[in-house]
Image (tube, rainbow, N blue to C red):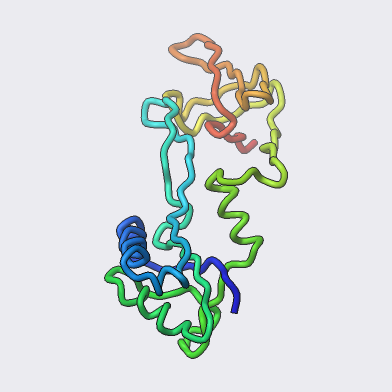
Length: 189
């Protein structure tokens, strides 16, 4: 067998604890360290809006309830995987075969690359631009932020910043307001 990244299912919220335990096992058992060469809880930084409509950056798990373990499984695959499965909070390896008679299946190179792209460890192969399908004069509904549930008319579109300038009727007056693309949706006509 070859070296690869394997997905280990854990109790939700135990990911970092199990990562620390596996790292301790690696530090205390030189033989285990030969076969287990890495462990990771993939985290991504996401921008979220709080109740006041303010942006803030937040760390989130890419795979809640799962960790990645880099293993070099060979003939003694059962001993290595059993050491990990016996850790309290681990429920098992993600594998195509559930019988336990064959070794777990590692992530493909493509799957591992996608995870690393989400964590920001490597640059994406190509950058995706969000589809912009708003038009000037179109009516939209604000779905989040301080102006949630207000309907407005698109006055201007800024593709670089991903923002719309809307004209909202607030207390009987039309007021220009800037919002993100993600804060609005088209109204059904």
